[in-house]
Length: 371
Ligand code: FAD
Ligand code: UDP
Image (cartoon, rainbow, N blue to C red; front, side):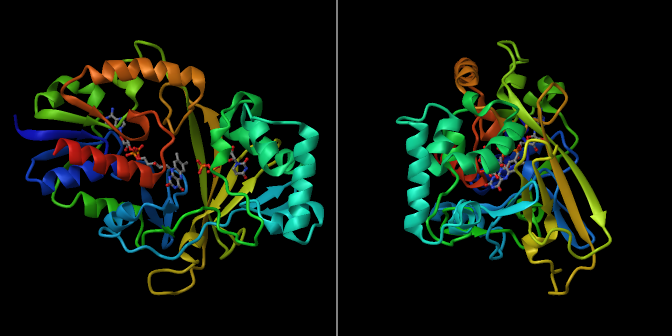
């Protein structure tokens, strides 16, 4: 065998594994079917702006070990995510905080806000939330659910809020303060110079073959390595023989505008049901509208995100972690466990709604066991 490991996918999971394997003296080949490294965190420079080509990515974590690990490969800026919600022209602060409650109800103090939420919670009569709708109403009340959650969620997931698991919404903070930070995280930021550079640093000195679909050349590629680390979709690996897992896909419509400022914020979510996109990202604000020398950038690049149900041929982005898919995944997992030469990892390999920090943590745990 020419290599100890063949790593399928140059996203964060694959890049961390490949880096650690090389560090332990193993030989590694990385393949990716895309024309670029970095998987979904790939950024590309346009008009001096690092454009997040596969969706906006804000690094945030409470895991000190992961933070210390990843900052070896990039310096991070102090970007803090504070999205704005646009509901039919009314603007609200996200996460749900005192600015949101004041705009929604005119309340001024935390006690008043809490009383309002409690009143709406009581009216709804929910004791143990069984789905996303019930979870949302018991967290923030019906008004916020109707204006800021329902339309956005149904567009993003293509499903009724009553048919979605409660956990999806639990990650959103609800604060009785004026803290506009969307994340409850000790560490947060955007890698200076873009995510692609960070992943290139992880892959430094490692052979990478792009435009190479592992599943199309499986026999030849398997013959090159003792073991495979597979970070593509688990159902695709098994040729969908038990059926297809559901994913949500996203279409990005990106344009360069000849003006310095389109919306004044990195992310604006369109939370009504009628606007066809879920959100608009204005990439320059991830880096405060400046180039690397601190100069203001004259143009701007925006991306509208349209969410759709995944079908073969699309990019799978979000696993739909509901009961039905969980049960099918468990069957695929049994097949995966029986493959002695293959490790399945990452968001698609493990069919898990992982954030970047969780993917890094999971790859590092695998490295500890494997290497
Ligand atoms: P991926 O990045 O998907 O990498 C898998 C790679 O495998 C891809 O490059 C793919 O081309 C390749 N591949 C697949 N099949 C094959 C094959 N057959 N042959 C060869 N190569 C193959 N997380 C955060 O922490 N903060 C955020 O703000 C955030 N925003 C997000 C926004 C969007 C729109 C999405 C979809 C995700 C977001 N995430 C965010 C999650 C983050 O993208 C993931 O946690 C992380 O990128 C997953 O890394 P991965 O290596 O598992 O997968
Ligand atoms: N959400 C919402 N309104 C918003 C933003 C988020 O209802 O303006 C809900 C939606 O259901 C989404 C979930 O909160 O799926 C989690 O949002 P987050 O921004 O964490 O999702 P991401 O796109 O980062 O995975």
